[in-house]
Length: 428
Ligand code: ATP
Ligand code: MG
Image 1 (cartoon, rainbow, N blue to C red):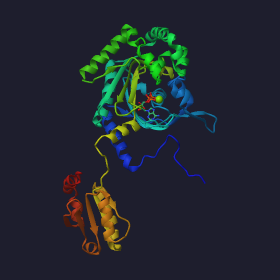
Image 2 (spheres, rainbow, N blue to C red):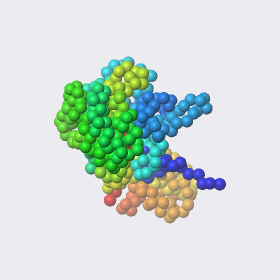
Image 3 (cartoon, helix red, strand yellow):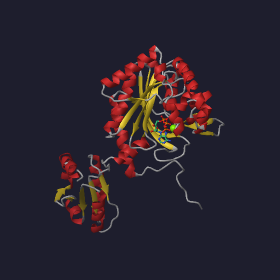
Image 4 (cartoon, rainbow, N blue to C red):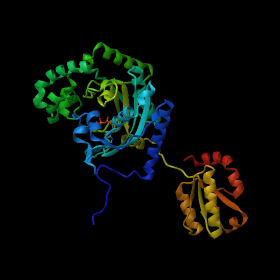
């Protein structure tokens, strides 16, 4: 029989690593909630057509990377490759626009793309994303970007760069496309195969190519920023100005494009120097045409998504080691002591402490060893004598200092003990 394994491009996230995930999730939830964003949870699979219309058939994601299958009812079904399309579908289907004003939404969860797995690139990966719908105000673009930078900074990440561009509006891009094709035509033979293909279908995507030679050619291509109409230019100048006012540094990158018609104005990425080839931690931009493209009323919107696997790689490189900690490791031996210990562990947990109960029934010496290895701040010991007297022995594991408590008194004093536990747990 062959050995069962997790599928290529997927992985188990084990408890030691989950601490990092929980830290990111808690930090994101706090920062987004403080900015009045509300969480939305949409299904993990949707009608294939949603992504074809919402991401675009000419993109790699839809063209090559989707997990698409026919379900038992003959419906073409796709595991979501990203979060925005589902959120926008829900926005339209659930009349979220009906309350008027803007909708500030965020989501978190797994996404699926059939890609070649490598560091920071998987087939099941995870994103946290934000969508701000219902306004074309440049302040919205800057709010979205500021929240993303705030999140990454709060997590302690350094060496990050914000790359910024504007792809303008449809008519700006029309003029730009002509100029771009004119520039690229003489290099046709030097472009990579995909890019040659795109020359007629979607030339702006060539700027985004990962091929070295194509990138060199793209470096000298005309810049979209020189083709923006007055309105687009005003929007972009305001975004840049506001970013500066907020002290958020950025670099213009005219090669940062999204080639589809419903992407408008601001496009941005946050990249890290410490990630190698998969440098982008956060990608986002304005999509003023998408809601209409999916059957809703014209609605301006902006959003971003951060990739959690890449964030975790960065966090693990920082010195800050994250581990979960236990307050009390509770050991006991003998029938009466063991049942009292079970009860005491529940009562201490209800009072707010983290308690691990040793269930081995082995000799105290062995249980003490496990207590030492558990990383707990203190060990509670319950033997026959303690059970008889209703007491419990408390041993601070770092100093070896011991105290005897009435069990009832220990429970009554939990609040006064908490600061002592806290200070004894500071890892040295
Ligand atoms: P890339 O250029 O790396 O393929 P992308 O343009 O496809 O990125 P987006 O669709 O903008 O990425 O998704 C936003 C973020 O999600 C990325 O910046 C990245 O951090 C993360 N991400 C995208 N695809 C994957 C993947 N296959 N595995 C892990 N993370 C991913
Ligand atoms: Mg990709």
